[in-house]
Image 1 (cartoon, rainbow, N blue to C red):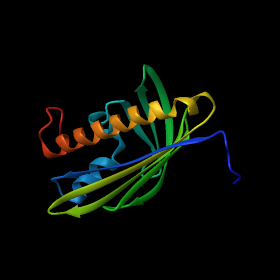
Image 2 (tube, rainbow, N blue to C red):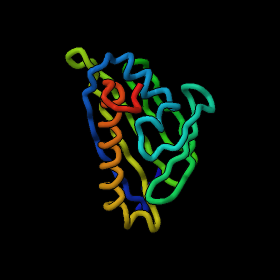
Image 3 (cartoon, one colour):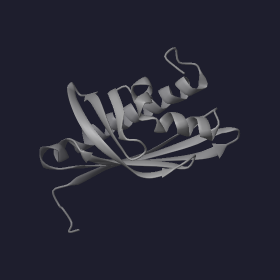
Image 4 (cartoon, rainbow, N blue to C red):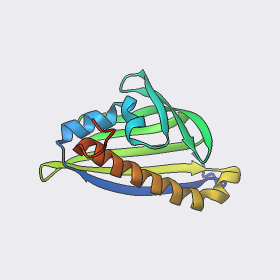
Length: 152
């Protein structure tokens, strides 16, 4: 694929350690119906084809958008990677799960391609999206460790 000079990539890497077994964390994260419980911008999510394709609706910066995502890696208790195939922004999110002293180390890498007018706002958007992801991972930890009132 030829280089596309009008696209700007926004990328970040985060991690969180959750005091729950890898199997439990993987099962919860990969059940997309749980997204609204731990991701602030998620309104709803549902499988179109289990473990292959899902649809989500989110609210971000005062707007609501629907995105269809494809699962590009599903390795039980190891990897869960997705990419947006329909929606306002093209992005990929990679999740890796590893045992860590009786708990789970969850690493998340995200990359979005922004073009047109959005590329000028990419730096601002990156900090807001990264802050939101960090907050969502903190909430995931609280939910799975049982210290969030909305938790499982």
